[in-house]
Image (cartoon, rainbow, N blue to C red; front, top):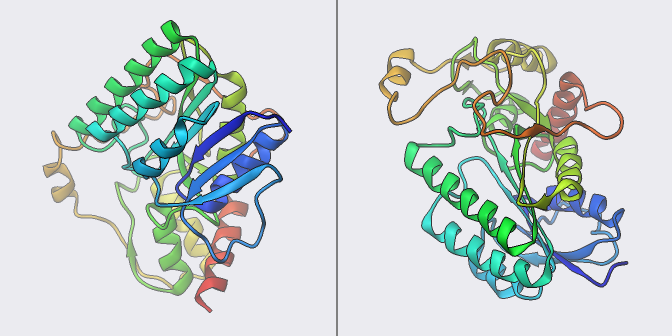
Amino acid sequence: MSNKTTLMMTPTARMGRLIAEGLSQLDEGGLLLAPRDPDLRAQLPEGWAHLQGDSFDNETLLANVRTADHVVLVFKEGEGGDPAEMSLLSNIADTLEKTQGTLVIGREMSLEVPQPDQIGNQRQGALIRKAEDMLLDRSLTGGFRLALVAIPHIYGPGTPSEGLQERLSAAASGSPYTWPGKPDQEPQLIHIEDAAKDLVAAFQLAGRGGERLWVAGAPEVTMSSLAQLVSEITGGRSRVSWPDVTFMESLRGKYTRSTARSRPFARIPPGRELTPQSGQRKPLGEGLRETLLSLSKVMT
């Protein structure tokens, strides 16, 4: 095991464990900052320790970043994009300029807005771009390796109970729920296991001056077909509704929504697609069945 330390922050313990398992194959060990998960039976790989804390816990991150050689941060949907993040990332850059290490930042896209340059409201998106531009400059001048990864909306056992996971929880319990967006929108989705593999690949691809990477999600799926697939798996026990279109239209100007179909993440700043290194991604139907089954067991 390498004597270098990787400091990692993830929204859930399972996501952190999956990424740690991948990094262990690269002879990397370190510290994982993630919420405590009493139901997570599998242990972290040898060489890894768990720092209990909330996602985006700046105080704990700053307390440990000075001893880290590498840093991996995974932001869930709607997270980041504030002045505190800029300060945190600047401190991380200070450390990595000394260690000449690697920084990987993965940002999850929302379920209904599949555009990485349209995260949340306009102010949040502008702050995120400003922070990433700062890191790209610091990586070039300071010599540390950097990868900025746009990740589709993540689902599967062990993901945050928001977005698609929130709808799947309702479907598993037979409760009524509302799908976001419009029926013909094409969400970008990825299973948690595939997202973890892609972030490990990004760690290997990170370079001086920074690499912008985007990950393609499940192909050829609309909100309507996704809702139908969930209904088929669960036997149609839940009543599904759609948001009021008039209300959605009133949000324009505050929240930008995409109807792009030709290429996922079509408006991302120039970058390259991060493709799976081995094997195929978990099929959407299989991933949904697995997730709904795990949620059903939690509720019984």
